[in-house]
Length: 421
Figure 1 (cartoon, one colour):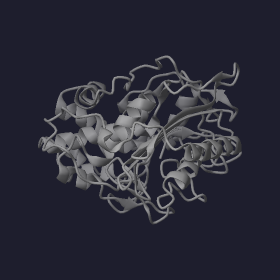
Figure 2 (cartoon, helix red, strand yellow):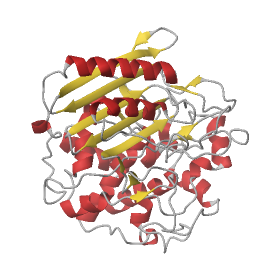
Figure 3 (cartoon, one colour):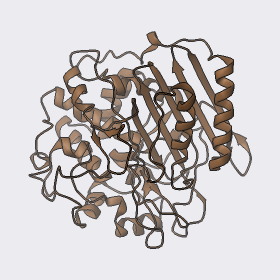
């Protein structure tokens, strides 16, 4: 589930603003309420500080190298942390014009992983009694089509039926005219509300960035803070995630890799490094690093910042049509064969951050391309290759015959595709 704008020879993914899907498997939280935010940084007690067994590490090296070659991924950063040791390594190049190498301390655009932060903010407000999961969105935001029928829960779980603004031809025209131009949440909703609904509220599933723009506005209304300030103060600071950012411009901290995409007006490859991520906003604008996502993966999956009963609701998943039975989507998180978390994709970048409660293992993948391989996300290909080695009974696999849940898009012959998933 990511947000991409793909191009020509294969299906263009509609501009999906930063959507990466996370599988909800684990439950449980530490803490009785969101007011207790002396949150520790992840499940360090379950992790070994030793390096992973050299034989397993070599198998991972070989699998990652082979998958990158097969899928034409320029550069990748991979981290695995668990009871059997850690594996942290950078592969390939950050800049194809200079052959500068990827480094493990790079910042990256995380696309739809942003949704996990927006959903967490909503659930914290649920814990505080400021928001109800079964409240209609009309209670908080005026002007939403069928807003008296669409609940907060349905928005978070991709069951609203609202049109995805990033698939709107009008939005795509505006985006491709100037990828560095900013968008406001109100503009994004305008593109969505001009399109017909895809199904009745609660009667289907469609990965949709519109849902998370609305949730971001609810956070702002009920907290009195801007969404970037709320996420920084209530989520990032308590977790000491000091290198995770919700940008309000196209600024991109150094060091970072160049990002390569074919989600362009003419379908030719371009660097999207400095494109403005505001079109993704609450659905996909954020930036992070490998070490910060190492913190976030277990926190997201285990519910550190939420009450246990709220985390349990978060992990109640629905199945997406066309995907394996062990793939489900919850409240801003997915469960893929037991791996809980989300993926993310913006033009030029893809990320996977997941946690496997059964093995107390965290996996983070960051790459500097969003160009599909045979209709599949290259980040998904890497996640599958890695989990076949580290968790053979829990392989991160999406149907090879279908685009990932976050990337359903129009045909390439009609419109430029969505910039993010």
